[in-house]
Image (cartoon, rainbow, N blue to C red; front, side, top):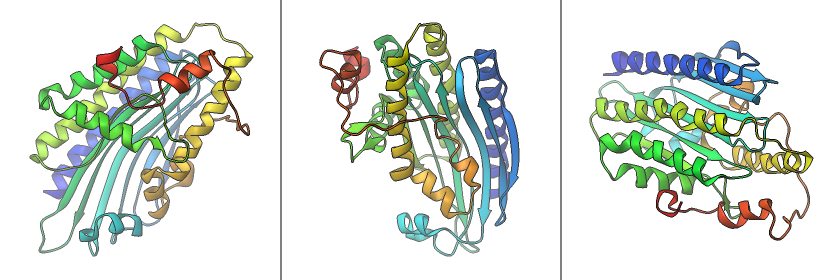
Amino acid sequence: MSHPALTQVIDYLKNLQDRISSALEQADAGASFREDAWQRPGGGGGRSRVLRDGAVLEQGGIGFSHVFGEQMPASATAHRPELAGRNFNACGVSLVMHPRNPYIPTSHANVRFFIAEKEGSEPVWWFGGGFDLTPFYPFDDDIKHWHQVAQQALAPFGDDLYPKFKAWCDDYFWLKHREETRGVGGLFFDDLNDRPFEECFAIMRAVGDAYLEAYLPIIERRKNKAYGERERQFQLYRRGRYVEFNLVWDRGTLFGLQTGGRTESILMSMPPLARWEYGFQPEPGSPEERLYHDYLRPRDWLAEL
């Protein structure tokens, strides 16, 4: 199964990177992605694309990677001991967009495929992915739209998938040390292999294909909204939470670093500017307090908004 399946998935992922890059360049109308192709010494490589100083996007990164090796890193075998002694292929597309305007949320998406093989044994494979939204000044219609697109993308595969993957997202992007969600969530799934390969692959494609439908209308609605220094400083402060999550909790960051991936590509999700402030407390009744009080916790957005 391995070779043709892997080729099929890689072709899709490269095409997805191309489509998203092109659409976001068009939405920005001010800058283009610069591509760096790279090789991993232990096997594999990828192409990292970064857009900087755009009219809409202060910085955005979207990377395709395909890495392989003769043995699994410690982080993977601790999570899945049955992978010990197998060679592996891991491929995926991951992106983070950091808009300039604080009224446009930061967005993240990722889709990936993993397969580990050993002679005389059946391959071990799974898909993963998702997308999530991190607003600084939330708008209910943006959040509802984001989750409606997520629900509709998964609807052909059963009514149970959206609530399952939505709850998984809330749990995964929970900052334990802050006791808050990273944002308003979306979808997250991992280790998807409980259905036939083609159906699992179709679920991953549905999630990857839905990202632009979910995010582009939000950019269009908010990109011209006026903001001031107060909003900008709060955006930079909240970006700090993004950095904290990626460096403290994100399994993908750890896997990339432990497998000898390209550090610049692994960390291109970081915002270009962020700030920390000791003991920050939002003013009572302020829009900033509204974010903390109403949005940084799991909620049934489709039922409540």
